[in-house]
Length: 332
Image 1 (cartoon, rainbow, N blue to C red):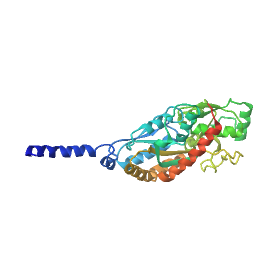
Image 2 (cartoon, one colour):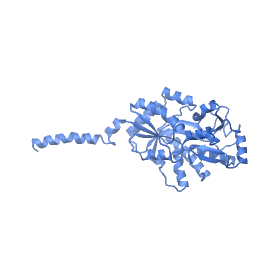
Image 3 (cartoon, rainbow, N blue to C red):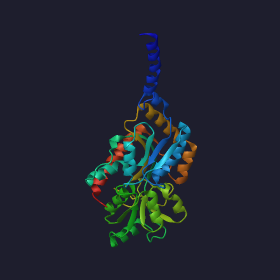
Image 4 (spheres, rainbow, N blue to C red):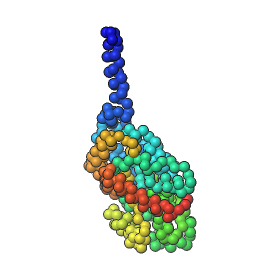
């Protein structure tokens, strides 16, 4: 090899090495994460539990990671399926995350129930951290005639299929909770699906629907302002922010229990070094004073679980919810 060939080889080698070490899946790229903006998909409009969880956490992560974390409300498809599917299809590079609800596991089963194409599978996701976990609350307008669940059930039996209730979409968290109760009480209600919990709450305020199952944090302000009334809760125990609302268990509905949790997910193929950094950042984010204050002010205290514990929780909760879907069957 002459001098000219040696110089040419020496010039090419650093360029080829640089190109290799900047490939998205390379160790260098993983070590540099994050190098740009991160998108946090919320598969619902603003105003619901997933959005409540995402915004303060995104701000905290932005401070911790040093890059913007942008909340992307991507509603549609009923129950969050459009946003969930978009996150499942995204590159597993740590730049597209998903803050979603327990309906994540239910929606593929609902698709199978109706013989529809399944838009994603749970196996495409890796749980990162649970953020919130609240029992749903049975909420009606303050102007409604019902003061107790007994009042509501008696009226529903007298007018089958005539009392409209709102949900975040077919087989979403709010839909499943209400159908659990309706099946146990032996009543038929009129399901009115919205694009998310926020629009469903608006529907309750403007009289489009007369009842809703929703997280405590999303209705606390309206209840305090005298616009809504909570009649019962789906938890095993009463919610501290609504101490006068009995649980369905107390009222004799032993099989009516439902929690609306919000958690962060990434793609199953996310490289381990990025997952490790993300888990560490999430552990710090949920302990940030500003995040704790925001959640407590909304009546939804932090219910953090790190990835291993959260994965076990998701597996157990998903099995219970899928069993509920199969028991409920096809409902519109």
